[in-house]
Structure formats: C-alpha cells, structure tokens
Length: 394
Ligand SMILES: *Cc1c(COP(=O)(O)O)cnc(C)c1O
Image (cartoon, rainbow, N blue to C red; front, side, top):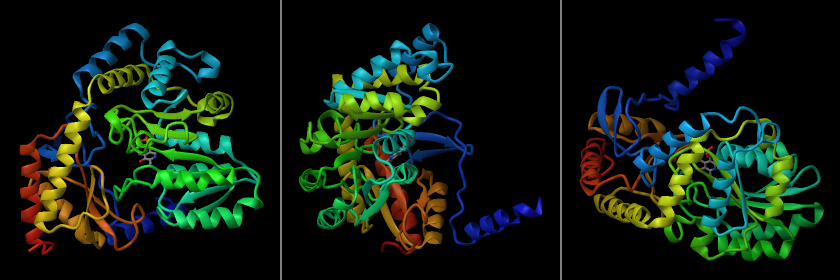
C-alpha cells in the first residue's frame, strides 16, 4: 500500500471499530421474497422491491422481447445519437400514470435530482430543503451553487419562518422535500408544505422515490395521496424501487421537461436508460394501470407486520409506510441483531451513521407484496427469538 493512502486504511479501521463498516452480501438468486445469499436461503427484508416486480415474468418477458428488437444499449447520449421511440413511449406513459403533462427519464433517481436541481436554481437563488432529505437531493443542491437553507424535518412552521425571513434576499427559490423518508418511513406533510410555499413565489419539488407504486390510488404516488394534482411543480421519481428496474424520472410542467432536455447535465452527458430497462418499466406501468392488486397486498402486508411487531414490543418509530425501522439505538447492537437474524434465516440490514443519526441505529425491514403471510410469520418468529436473546424485548 502506498503511504499516500494510509489515511484510507485508518478511516476504514475507524468504521470497523464503530460498527459502521458495510459488509455487502452476495446474492446468487433473483430478487423476491426469498433469496440465496452467501449460499443460504433467507427471507428478504431488505429490498425496495415493494411490488415484487424486480423478477416479475411480464417485466422479464418485455425486456427479452425489446432486446430482440432494439438490442441492448442506447449507444450515446440522446441529444447526439437520437432517442429511441421506446424511451419517449415510457415518458408518455409515466406522465399519464402520474396525472401530469410531461416526464423525462434519467439513468437513476440519483441522477434525476443531480440533473434537475441545478437546472432550476443557481447562484443568487435559494433552496429550502428538509434536513433529512436524501443524499441525491443534497448533492444536487450543492452542485447548483444556490444558497441552501435547511428546515427542520417535516416542520411546516420552520419552513414558513425561513421563507418569510430569507426568501426576499434571493432571486429564484426552490422548496424540496422527500415524499416518504427512506430511513424512518414517515410521509412529508406535502399538503401543508404546498399551502406555505404558494405565497412565496417558490417552485415546489417532491422526491417521491419511496412513494411511487406505494402511496396514492394504485400507487400513483404522494401527489395523488394528498390530491395535489397540478399544485406540485416538479416530481422526482425512481424506477428502481416499486417499479423493480432502474432509472429516474422528472415529471411535471412540459416546460421543465423541455428545459431538462436542454440543460439537465446527466441527460446531456450520460447515456440513457438501456433498452431492457425501458421495456421492463413499460410492462410495470401496464401492470399498475391494470389493477391495484399488488399495491393492496403491499399495504395488507405492511399493516399486518407492523401491528405484530408492536404487539411483540418493538419500537417501529414514526413510520406510516411499508418502510419499518426497528429502533435499536447503538450501531453495534443493530449489527449484532442483523447477524443473528441472518443466522435465523432472515436478511434484514442494520443501518447506522451516517445514513441515520448516531444513537439511532436500527434494522430496517422492507415489506413487499412479494411476501406471503407465512413469510411474514416466519420473519416475526425470528425477530421474537433474536429480540429476546439480545434483551430488546421481554
Ligand atoms: C432511492 C432514492 C433515490 C435514488 O434512486 P435511484 O434510482 O436508486 O438512484 C433518490 N431519492 C430518494 C428519496 C430515494 O429514496
């Protein structure tokens, strides 16, 4: 090892000692309720595969057919090599599904934020951002060079105070919140945020990554959940969670979409989603538009699991969504809990600093429509025995 890199060795050692080193498991099966992980069959409580679409036969078949017709890759950025009709079709279908006029896809939700935010604000402008917003919002905001004003988590009064004190000092303004907060599973009070924001000449943007396919009628997302159609200016979305594939979306006013075709840097300088991704996402939209069955099952599973966890005596925090944090406190306990669960056949990761604040380490259980009742019962049994063994419940 070169002496120049000694600091990395030291940092890694620190992570190890404080229980924050990421150990990445190797999967040798598709995503689903059960996985083969490091040679062991385990119940999957980790993925964002809310609707079980990641290995759905219709998505797989759509991808297969599209590859036969279009090949695999887009071969360059869309502004240079042209854009496939398939991508345009997906954007049209996603906009219709979400009840907005236009949408543009990016390679990921992360890129959608990093592309969209700097296209909307710059030097001399201001971003009002929930303090717990996703890392990709934080990075997009930093890249924009706009002034960033953080408001307290889901605190509309604090947002209002900040808007009234600071809005006047800047040119354009953007208010950004996650829709569903991925670590706590709580939902932003978007209706109240809209009411406050509308008086301050600010563009309202929500990142609905964990809300799409989950909240609203048939999974149409947070805007539908609150009935805010036409009131939220920009919605960011991902195709990697409930949609089961990979890709990002920005949707809303056609003017914003047109602007991102001209000025969204990951749109201009990075190739588009691949053919099988796009085709599989189109199949996902078909499934969501045909029936609410998967979304309904996701919520039935969610209510059942959370209720049982509460009865067992676990603290599942503030969540009102399928994201179920099991609050444990210190990171080493959460790591040990996760290891013991794995030995009991349940794959559920511990999450610690810096993803969540220090002292708020947890196991995060992700409920899916892919789970059957027996799967959830098996998971509950494992939580019971590990929780008792480690003194978390009595
Ligand atoms: C997961 C997530 C993203 C990133 O989505 P990818 O498509 O995986 O890049 C962005 N924002 C939020 C709020 C997320 O939860």
